[in-house]
Length: 229
Image (cartoon, one colour):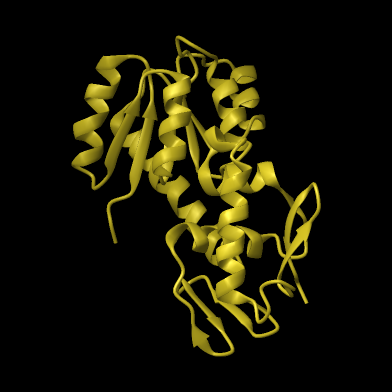
């Protein structure tokens, strides 16, 4: 398995320079951003395993970054901040943070919090249904395998991500915006043509009659739904 990726959104260069070798020596790969906007862009582009987020950023409050991140991602987030009041911690946790570490902090404590957050995220992933079947369409999420009528179908990474998002919400209508955010990230919410192209490709690969889809259903003017039965 590749080293877990940690995205550090922190405007203090000294802290980033300290965290770099600390994380690397403990088996993590670090990405960094010094503003909230850059942090959100990095999170969308690289899909890190965990985010360490400072609340006192120069362009926007860290809580705003957290809320925007939670609109499309469930990545574990550890808030790192000099704001040590209980109200600040509650606000961060209510906004979707997984943990809160006050500055100044020791590296051993932060590394322990990272390990706990990653274990919790892994446990949640394992609890999720590893397979999905409707008709002759079968998804094995643990093996990243898609079959139709027992025959494996090769999907591109984007096609696979799209079908797995739909499978996680099978039977539920997902809006164009929701799908664009989950599959392509928050900077692509107006690119509805992406969805049309990739849904057409998926239907050609997965549907018995692509022009009359049985599994990948369109909700006109709203979005798409993967049939649950």
